Image (cartoon, rainbow, N blue to C red; front, side, top):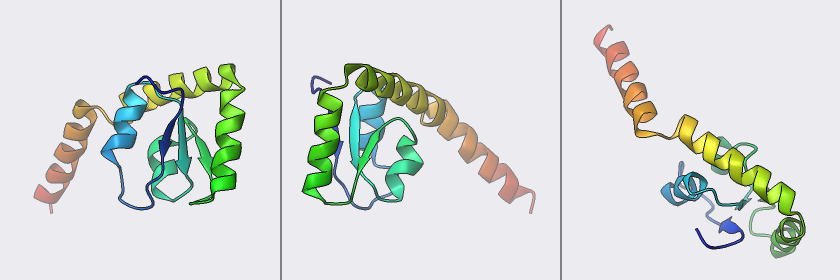
Length: 104
């Protein structure tokens, strides 16, 4: 990812693949503060008020002038994506669900 900051501006949609991919690539992420994004991104990103341009501008400005914070968020995003959204993790979760259903 060649952008200094990736903006996840979606409003709905669950675990958005573009957000997970940005995390995996180590992007510094600013996201709309909607319930889905903190579930995926956790503390590995900066949030702005949903669809509020002033809030987004403030978040971007703060991140542009804080290289240490950007790096911390990048590292946190990579780690969170690796831990929560790897194919091994997804397969393990599906297996757990199917085994649970089979035992009912």
